Length: 71
Image (cartoon, rainbow, N blue to C red; front, top):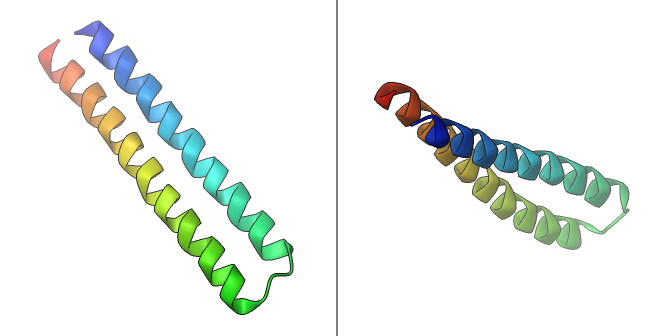
């Protein structure tokens, strides 16, 4: 079950990387000087990616907890 812990940690770190990427993309979108409609559309895409990254991170943490409980 040690492998499950390491795999879960790697998946969780990928999700964390996605969350950091979403933060960077949102900061770039805000500083791009877009009009209101274009900024809303861009942020809507970023929110979708943010949710996906959060779910990936949560699945990784679930795998870590499962690995710890089974060990």
